[in-house]
Amino acid sequence: MVHYLIAMGGNLGASASLFQEALQKLSGPETVLRQMSQVFRTAPVGASAGEEFLNAAAIVASELSAADLLRSMQAVEDILGRQRAVRWGPRTLDLDLLLAGETVVETAELIVPHPALWYRSFVLSSAVEIAGDWQHPLLGSPLSALQDRLQESPIKISLEFCTSDLGNDHAAAVFVEDLRTKIPEIAWGGDAVEEEFARVQIFSASAEQLPYSYRIPLPRTRTIPLFVRDYADAMVQLEQLSIAIRG
View 1 (spheres, rainbow, N blue to C red):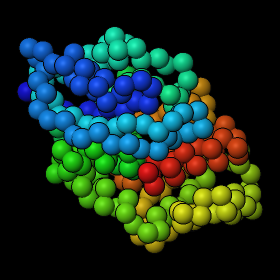
View 2 (view 1 turned 135 degrees about the vertical axis):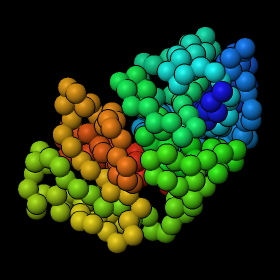
View 3 (view 1 turned 90 degrees about the horizontal axis):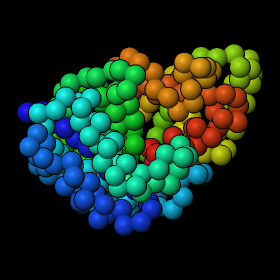
View 4 (view 1 turned 90 degrees about the vertical axis):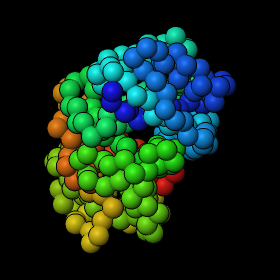
C-alpha cells in the first residue's frame, strides 16, 4: 500500500464536518484513513475566494494508484456538492493530492508532488502536523523544513522575466518597484537575490500554458513559473502568491 498525503479545504457551509464525511466516503476496502490533522482557519487567496477558509490534511494508505485515488477524491467532491464555476472561488470542499510517498507523477491529469505544496502556508500548516518528516521528493527537504523557510523575515523572492510582453528592462524595473510598493512584506528583486526563498519566472500565457497552470516537468529547485496575460495579470498573480506564502 502507498501512503498518500491529502489536503482538504473549504469555506462554504459546514466544511469541518465535511472533511470527516469526505474521508469516510473515501475509505473502503482499498483505502484506509491513517491520520487527520486539526482544522486550521486560513486567509482566502484571491479576490474571488470569499471568506476565510478551513484547512486540514490527512494521511491515507491505499492500494489505488495516484491517478485512481485522484478520481475517487473528485467523485467524493462531486457527491458532497463541490462546484467548479469560478477558479480559486469559494468552495464547499476541495481535496488535493499532495504527496504519494516519494513518487513523482507528471501527467496532464495529475502532478505529484503538488506544485504549490512547498510554498503555501495554508497547506503546510496542517500537512506538517501529521507528516512533518515526509520528504519532498524533488526538493529533498522534509515538509517541516519547508515550513520553517516560510518564517524567514523578510521573505526574499527574485524575479526572472521570461517574456518580452511586459516590456524592456526599464519596464521590468518599474514593475519590481510597483511590487515593492504594493507588497512591502516581501523583498522583491529583479535579479538573483542572495539566500532567496524562491525564484519566480514570469512567462507569457498561451493556449498550452494558461494562467494559473503548472509547468511539466516540475522545477527541481525552489522555482515558481507563472504564466500571465499582461502586466495587470502578473501583478494579480504575484499578490495572490504573496498571500499564499505569508498566510
